[in-house]
Length: 142
Image (cartoon, rainbow, N blue to C red):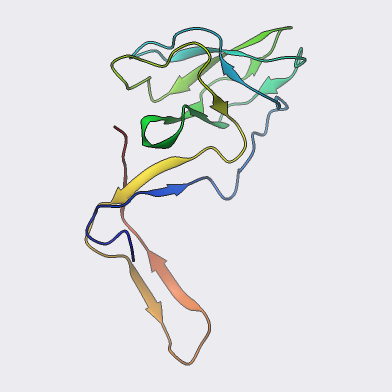
């Protein structure tokens, strides 16, 4: 209900794919500046040689509403220190993201606001369940 009025954000991750299908794990940061419009990023990884990120994996660059949720668009394999990843959508912030910015692979978040005034659901007061739920969200970044 706190989303009503289209003021607050809903931070949500893909419940079906909370972690990458690829095998890369551990601490990840941008190896260099990811400029506005970039569709390829270089991520610094340690001890991940030969491990992968696969098409469809989600990553979060940065944090909060200033961060960005991106999808891996092509399989990538790490060398000893980095992994180069093709992403969509392109990097949005005018300043891009600086080298060293955190890249989250575990439950990467997207930030959304209600696109319409209220969620729609069917609820039977005599039951403990909701019989259907629809919510119209629009990704929000600043």
